[in-house]
Amino acid sequence: EPEVTQTPSHQVTQMGQEVILRCVPISNHLYFYWYRQILGQKVEFLVSFYNNEISEKSEIFDDQFSVERPDGSNFTLKIRSTKLEDSAMYFCASSEYSGRIYNEQFFGPGTRLTVL
Amino acid sequence: QQQVKQSPQSLIVQKGGISIINCAYENTAFDYFPWYQQFPGKGPALLIAIRPDVSEKKEGRFTISFNKSAKQFSLHIMDSQPGDSATYFCAASMEKLVFGKGTKLTVNP
Picture 1 (cartoon, one colour):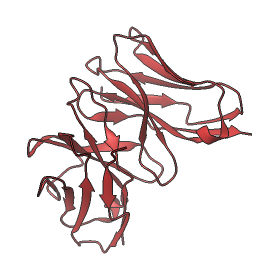
Picture 2 (picture 1 turned 180 degrees about the vertical axis):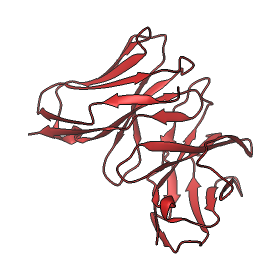
Picture 3 (picture 1 turned 135 degrees about the vertical axis):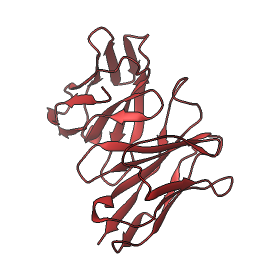
């Protein structure tokens, strides 16, 4: 069964450093998302991406964050200068259709980001 | 308006019992309501979903009941099993998913 994959599974970084989290969405999916989950809290939307453009972003997704689809398979989230409060699980998700039609989003296993 | 309220925060059920988790929303523009199951250290996995033109959807032991006028929906897990022990999130969607805070379900053997 196709699945979303994410690397690395755990990333430890120093405050102020740049990190890139990588995702490989399901191959025929067209809509891509990043969510984050601070330990013990709910999953929060960060950004959605379609046709090489950001469709929507939350207020969490400030200028320190960027997303890119550098090739036909990878989808990346970059945090330019990490803060302690960026420590969280970051989930990539993908869906075949947009939310207005049928929004079955499939999640990857997540990357645990620890900022020291 | 974008919130989804979920209760209870935690739930303990005996094996074979019925687990019921409730969610409420305010934004009537939401048009898709999925439930996700999450095991520790894993990503959320889609369990079952419903659209607002349907009042109930059943898949195996899992049933969603949807009350459009009350803006509420619930997940019922029949014949709960220890393997169902996980955190369950309801969500509502237009494009992005707006998640509830989650319910930690423990099913005792």
